[in-house]
Length: 282
Image 1 (cartoon, one colour):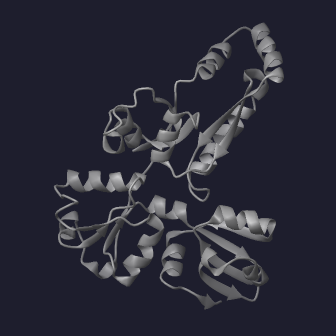
Image 2 (tube, rainbow, N blue to C red):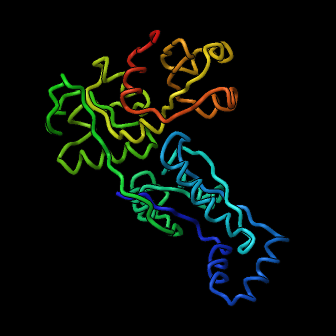
Image 3 (cartoon, one colour):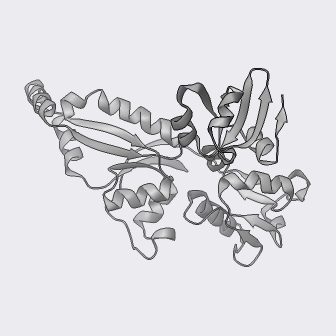
């Protein structure tokens, strides 16, 4: 699948495209008008530790380089991802959103979450961004070597409303599995899945990208741990030079601790280690 950039039917965007092809004099006139009146647009992305957020930021910077010419200034908003972005664009709460292409297809055709709402015909794709893979993850000792092996097992297909839940359902049904009958389906958030796989409480989960988009790695001086409640972190490693911990609330940690900490994107090994109880002194 591919990520696509979508928008609602907004007149100013089409207008700016037309003006972008005008003569130089018209451009200068438009720039003068833009200096007097700027239209602000918001791009819906995803979690700040994932791919959507920096992608939206890059698009906003490109648009803002010509803000004086077009009279448009773009800002970025961290959101819940594809489904949220589609609904927010259609409701007029966002002008643009980064969305999985299969989710856009389902929205336009009134499928999946949009079955009751009907086809969302006013959605438009601006451009594709990148291909995306969906990873299906099982514990080493779960004896899961194919999708057929999932029958009778306890399987996490994702929380209701998430993009990867429908991805999981689509993949399972394409391989002849009924997620409501063939196994015990769980509806856990991506961030909860690695620890439960490690504990043996579930045997299978999906969408590595969603897991990595949820969690971030925080590093800083150990004295900073006293400034936040312990439930902000999942596992803490203390060392001679500070601490390292996993968090699912990177935005709030960054807001409260500011430049005193470094917040990096976690890798899958980090997520598994900390959610499985990896608290230790380095």
